[in-house]
Image (cartoon, rainbow, N blue to C red; front, side, top):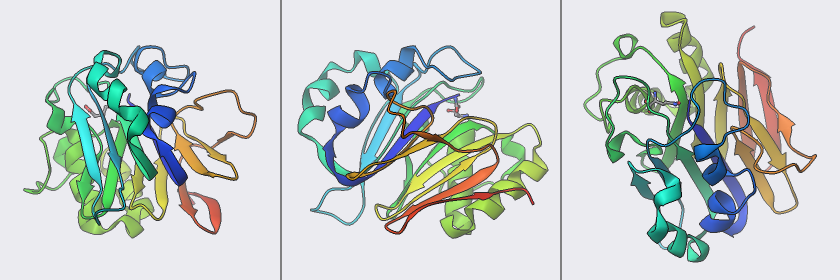
Length: 230
Ligand code: GLN
């Protein structure tokens, strides 16, 4: 399963968010701490982030392991943003291996990452999907129904594929939405902003684990977590 993170708050460099934390995404690409399936996340990575100059987020994705990306590592310390979503990928068997299958996927202002797997036959065929990868099809389905229906959409997809893992993470630069369905997720609130991540990137005691089968929403008003199954 993949690992992902989102940050909303004071501008931080991509180096600070993705590469430098002791147990951050870079380390998680070869040595995750809380990953039940898959030993590492070496099948690509991606980061999407908002910049003041434009409305839609920009992305940098790659099919290579994050640890080999020396050019990204040299530029990451000067790329700064207050709204970031990043992921490292462990591809599901049978899925495409090129960079278009790496999260984040996007639609307008939204960025989306999927930690998990889903049977593609339970999802509608969608010409707007960025890749034939299950996660890209799921992203297109979520965008189609509208991110405000995220909880409902996840419950419905899980109903059609009970073996699915449906950890989703989205941001439009103003809020973060996330679901837990089979894989871990934590959040961290500081004076500077809010982070949501598959695994805590350090041992700060303020990290809070999100219960499985939950919907999490981060807005300027704070963090809310609601149960997905009644
Ligand atoms: N199923 C997705 C893929 O193949 C995500 C995999 C994951 O979460 N490890 O990329």
